[in-house]
Amino acid sequence: MSYYQRHIFFCLNQREGEAACADHDAQAAFDRCKQRVKAAGLAGPGGVRVNKAGCLDRCAGGPVAVVYPEGVWYSFVDASDIDEIVEQHLGQGQVVERLVLPPEVGR
Ligand code: FES
Image (cartoon, rainbow, N blue to C red):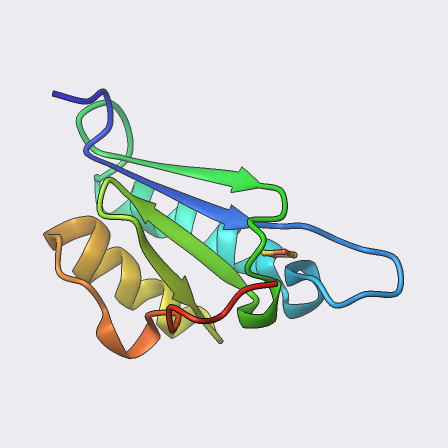
């Protein structure tokens, strides 16, 4: 059994003169996710961990986040998208299909 049931990583990368997830308010999405996970009682060992990450090399789909152990990649727009990921995927293990990053999207 793993220490966390689920782990979500948000790319917060910023680049000089090049598009990056930080240009799309990735920090606000990260903050929102942390707050919602905590409020839902999901945070901690046996539950969910929300982490910052550097570039995940899928910048063209930014802002991006990835959930393990399922390895599901998301691209999101606003706070309601984050809330949906928290409630459905992090809380119940159901993938939010409408926010899944298409497999061909790379850097
Ligand atoms: S800058 Fe976010 S994936 Fe590269």
